[in-house]
Image (cartoon, rainbow, N blue to C red):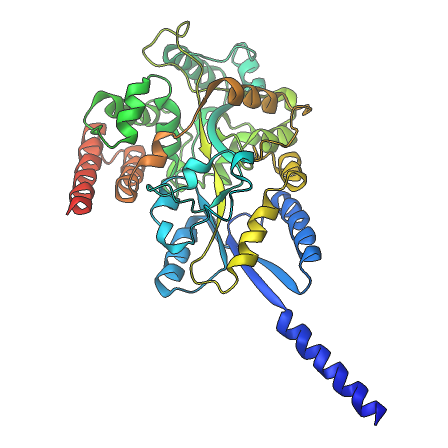
Length: 422
């Protein structure tokens, strides 16, 4: 009798444990990266220890197909409990697929930066920011020396950049820039980066408000610059067949190109380049001033919310999922993210000042003095952004002119705006 009672109690305990077991599924394009995995392991271990019976399951998705996969899940009201998002248009255009987080994050709003990029137009917070992301130009100091250039004084104006590229092409076997445009996204980096080289505050305001046409010189010039890079042979050949954050990055690190328009955080960044090439061989500079006096031009770093995590509207585990978002941004985990992946983290309480990286020191100083949030590419509608990418691909292949590209982007923009206003 006692044996049967013991067996019954064991069975009941097993059923109770099974009932408590819950899996929180997270979709992203980061968890397959070993250096990011170190950060996520830290988060998962702490969260699962604090929540017995809960299993966090990160499912890496291919970066170039991520939003297609996510859109399919959204249409079916099924899929992950938590999903990663880029700040800006990718978040705003999908805001209805995720629960509002304003009340859930009241206790951490003041502790994190980058919220604007993860909020809908009405101020609803859609996702919790993990990083600040922005654009900087990295350059190979060894190639500068080989070309007879001063590696400690990179170009500050467009005219100086032309001189540098001419020297690189003439005196070395390297290309001036490498660009990975297989997925056609790289032109957005250039537009956002070079806009700070000559846009005024009023230009930025008008663009963000949707008041600036592509036929205006502030935008036409940016497309002309992209065309100039391609026509002058500044881009490495085969740009349209190179992946942005794998092929192009590898070419730069191998020394086949003098410059890479990379990111400041967690990939294609100072940490990755310095670890491979050596800190002494990697330079970092802001986008050059264009048509303005560099002596009066204020340094500006185009950056804003980078990546963040959101809770899906269909998950049955909203409270647990929201709690996991809190765990992701705790200082002890964010410090691991900075140290291993070079992430410029959103948590303001993480001490990163002691870093020995010369590149990180420059970027952190720019964030203190010269941060320009809400970079332009984050405020294009999805159709406009898609057409800009398509035209960027065609400009590299020589199939259109900058005038034709501008006209096509403007046409798509006007069509999208008219449909929105109907």
